[in-house]
Amino acid sequence: MGIKLKRQLVLFDFDGTITKKDTFSEFLIFALGRRRLFVFLLFHIHLLLLYLFGVISIGLIKQKIMCYFFKGYSEEYFQNITSNFAEKKIPDIVKESALNKMIWHKEKNHQVVIVSASLKNWLKIWCEKYDVELLCTELEVKNGILTGYFFKPNCHGLEKVHRIKEKYELNMYSQIYAYGNSAGDKKMLLLADNAYYKTFK
Image 1 (cartoon, helix red, strand yellow):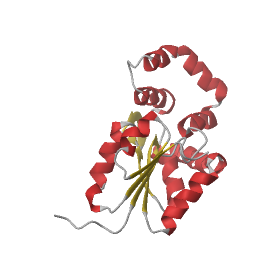
Image 2: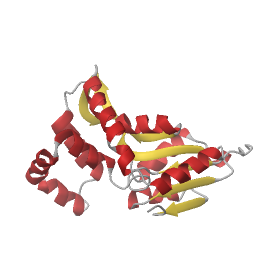
Image 3: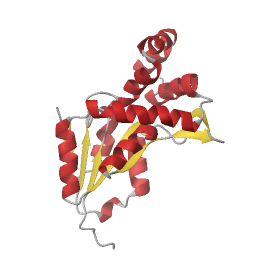
Image 4: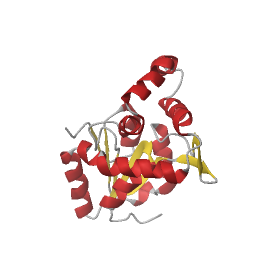
């Protein structure tokens, strides 16, 4: 039987929990403009209806958007766009209360992990700034070019749990904290000894 680590594990959702807005949506507006995005949604309204009726997942919609707009981009060019977004836009939508709590956990020497459905391209930059770990959605790249598809399934709902269990031996931690704000976080919250839902304003 393994000895439990004294260290504690802290799982944070990002969009809506640490941020005031969804960063995937904000990135699309930043990179494409509202008009271009609106036209796409108008001509693909059936996708939104299928999602609302539970026929398709939000992950499939995200992947179709990525294929439509970014398939064939070089990884370097796309990363330049996302880096610019991370530096210019994300700081403005971070909730101070959530950031302070995350920093508090860091100061307590807790192991902090961001678990998000948004893309690694901008999340990695933010996570490196605060020295926290990251599990998230990643884009597939072949020969330096985006295929438009995800490398693994969209990191949402049960997929968050799969990613966490794949990387961390949960029974080795003395305490697990989890913070989330949506239905897509509820399965992750069930992993925690201390679960917080819609805590930050």
